[in-house]
Amino acid sequence: MDTTQLLKGVLDLAVLAALRDEDGYGYDILRRLRGAGLEDVGDASVYGTLRRLFNAGFLNTYVVPSDEGPHRKYYGLNPAGRAELQRSGKVWHGFASIMDELLGETV
Image 1 (tube, rainbow, N blue to C red):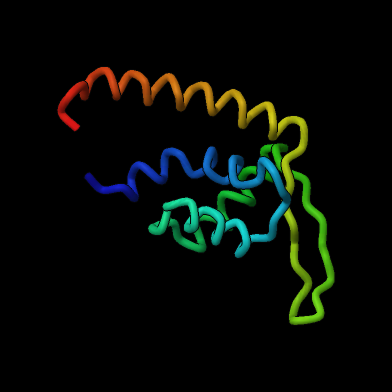
Image 2: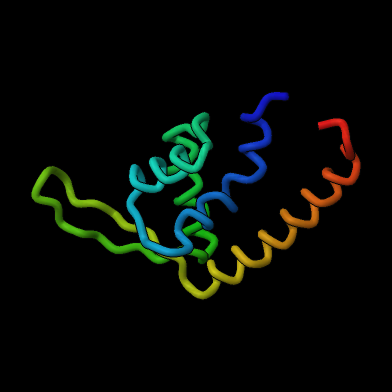
């Protein structure tokens, strides 16, 4: 099975989850996702997802000056983003439960 197709369907949820406990800038969020096991996630996909989630009203942003290069744009969950994380998490768990049931002992 091609995991990149699965990743496309859950990247919004994965990014929201990566921001659950701490704000982060683009590359930091990418490292969190890869560190969690999503090694195939691409830079452009994460940055596009951050823009989409921000435009949907789920994220706040702010800029932090950096002594080591350009300023960094940080993203954080706002109340709408936390609600979306909870809603999408429930959908994911329900879907995963159905797939577990269907697969049964085959895995």
